[in-house]
Image (cartoon, rainbow, N blue to C red; front, side):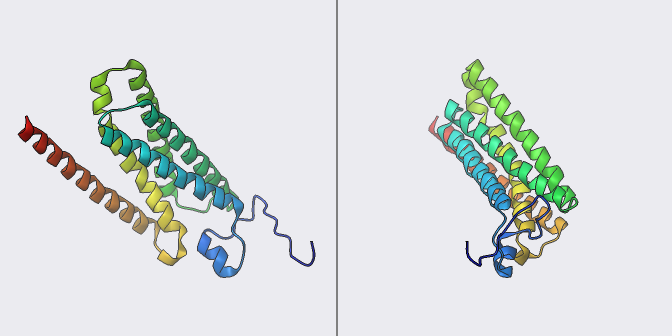
Length: 193
């Protein structure tokens, strides 16, 4: 292949943490990092479509449950890859981020299982109120997503605590917005009745 240097990735070759480090230093990005980022971002997209589709539709449907399960699989895949990468760096990374990430995956699993149970029971009252649980799980899941994003971009130069506070603050603001919207919708529905 000519004089081009061979780029070989081994399990211990995870020197660069982010996209920006790789391009700044002139190195190609680690394919495992690309796969992990793609999987976790796909989880965000799938889970968001499921949660907000259910919220907009007013009831839990099979397609939402499928999106929840697909989001769970993507997030678990991406997190597993990131875990292997962190272990190859002698455990480098944020312990708080790791704990919140595992808790978020456990919550996503509970959510997907419970959504499956609700669909199988076919209780309309449960299906119509399920969105309350969905939005809480989505908001909690968003915290480790935001923390990982902030910690992974060196340009932000954020500490573990700073990233955690920022993630919680963003989620708190979003939660307040959703509560205000829900209360407004109840008032409008009450006036129509």
